[in-house]
Image (tube, rainbow, N blue to C red; front, top):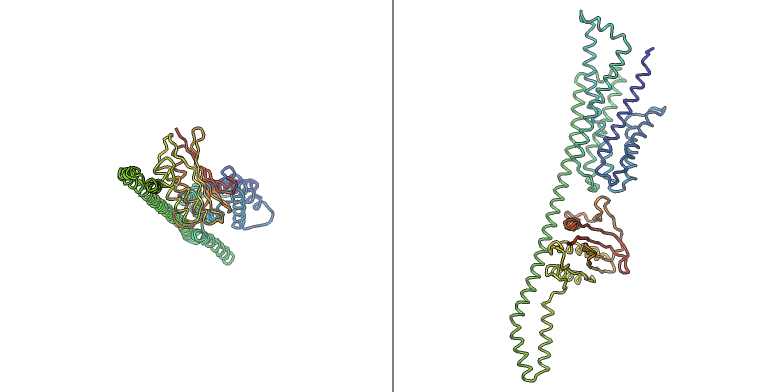
Length: 475
């Protein structure tokens, strides 16, 4: 009987526990960017460790692949309960980790088996060496020697697994990015396919390994070149996943950049419309001012002749012309006047009631162009939401509060508002490229003035409204 048998059991259990804890750490590291509730990440790792250890220590045999699959599902369940956003993305990360973990495990097993086979062949050849045969005979019969060999094998196995798995997860995380973009069904299928094929191929390899060993009563690791071939195979599987994820994220980044270009182009067109509106107003004013002398001479002539009724009609006609060339909305700044006038005409065409109580701050150092970006995007979103409502009404107002300037844009809203947990901005229901950058543009301008954006559904002036509040700091 081997007196060191209990030590084998202790070392084996400690090695398994260390592997499980490190795997849980790598799983948490991979899913961390996609979790809004960062303080609950420890629950994901704890669930993974608890389930794996429970399955290993129960008295019934369960295959390692099934055990780690159940542990990954348990961690995925805790993730979804802790953060209910982007369920599809979380499923992909769980499957990706499960696949990468087995691929790295296959690479490490191939290296350690090759190293052990090389060491074993060298050690056995000692007995045929005339001067080293004595060393072989003394050490081969010692139980502690084989215990030390087992410990060295465990250390080599763990020492290779840690940097390889950690490096693989870091590369995967860098390729996948922040993980805050919700995946569509087609995108999930694109990313899921190489992971699923990797897991399936590993299962097939395990099946044929077991069948070969049963049929030939030999270990498959004894086949020449088998370890190198499997290392290359698992490495190719991992690189395939990494390349697909990297190409996918680059494509998403190009989509975002294209969307930003579209938004910028639309904003430039809006600015052009506003400039044209201002130029029209000033052109009419210059023309009216040029004709003012003639109008006054005509009125003097009419009053001098005593034609008071005709003079009254002429004066009324002049007042009508003055109203026509005056801005539809007087907010205190020609730029914001143009923006609000254009949006007001758009609302009239779509049957939307517009109550405008916006006033440009006379002091505070706020740039008119920045305010035009806020007003343009806020009203564009309000108009888009209002056309789907039975009661179409938009309210815009502004007010100073101490050293803050607050802009409120509200529209009657009967639907439900889904907010991104990380950004605090509503999630867009549109799938077109470039949609959803307007709110980001508003927040960018607000933070330029040390402010922020708040969006929510509340009772506003007697109606259920979606209200956007933009807070800007003024001097």
